[in-house]
View 1 (cartoon, one colour):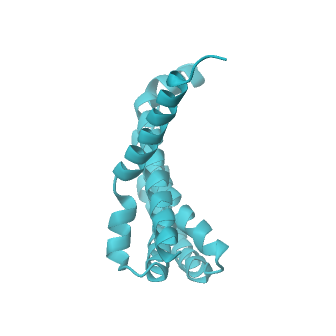
View 2 (cartoon, rainbow, N blue to C red):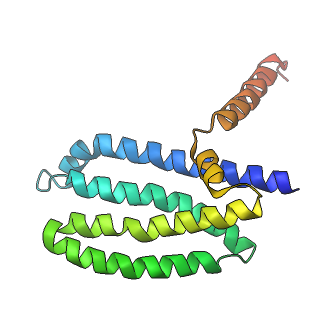
Length: 168
């Protein structure tokens, strides 16, 4: 049972992070034309702001997946504490950075609590699944080759099965 939970959490993290990273990459590629159409050419894309918010989003997806898992087993306290402390730091840093860098400074500062949640979640979860925090983070953030191969194989077998079945 322990190995199944470990595999489930690692797969959850991999799928969440890479789906978000791919989605945000697509959004960044099409953001110029999308903003031009959406605002009728009146507002240009602020690339540094988009990059800061995108980075925070990918980190957030990782942290929120771990937070959901830990909340389901009532181990959320350390994440709540890390987030609260990091949010105080982020507000102070964001206030200072906004005066220097504008909205990009605040967006960059908002990465701090997301990073705190991700790290706290990874540390707590790694202890629950009995691997080191560094090993957990490396494994949970790698490209999900095994999942893609296994699910692709299932899909291929399903399609072949349907094609071989005689019509009714």
